[in-house]
Image (cartoon, rainbow, N blue to C red; front, side, top):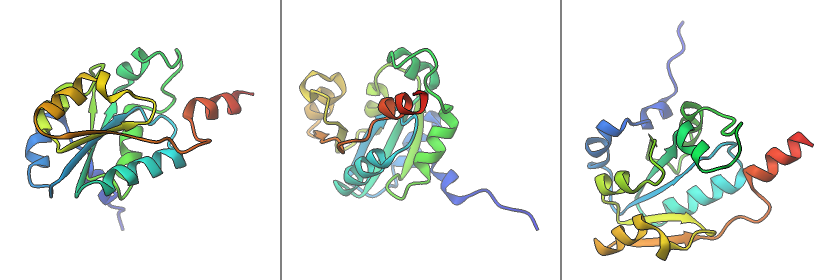
Amino acid sequence: MSVADPLFLDKLCSRSALVSRASPLPRPLIFTNGVFDILHRGHAVYLAQARSLGASLVVGVNSDASARRLGKGPDRPLNSEADRAALIAALDSASLVTVFDEDTPLELIQLLRPDTIVKGGDYDMAQLPEAQWVMRQGGQALALPFVAGYSTTSLVQRIRN
């Protein structure tokens, strides 16, 4: 007896297939992105809240190189982009997951044309080029509050101590 690949891996999507895979998804389409280095409760709550804003949620995961450029430390991310994307795909809230290498998800958002983009509460949505672009297209850009007490950076510090 052989073991089949888990079905959630079907949610992983290359950039080249993103438009064709996303177009049949039910609308409204929500988009968010992040590093999601060590998946924790705060991530799960945030992604569930993002999904509740629409019918489908596409998640952009920063590539390893992109995550390093965010300045989280020379040894971050701890988990590879493939592993981080697979873990997000395993969550019910995610409809599709793709990896992006740019510093911002603007190009992905321009391809997808989501109805709403969502970021964590520490972002000033008015300052993000991707938020400005979505709003010019008639969409929404929302910041969701953080779940208090959950942070990958603080978790990494606790482990190291």
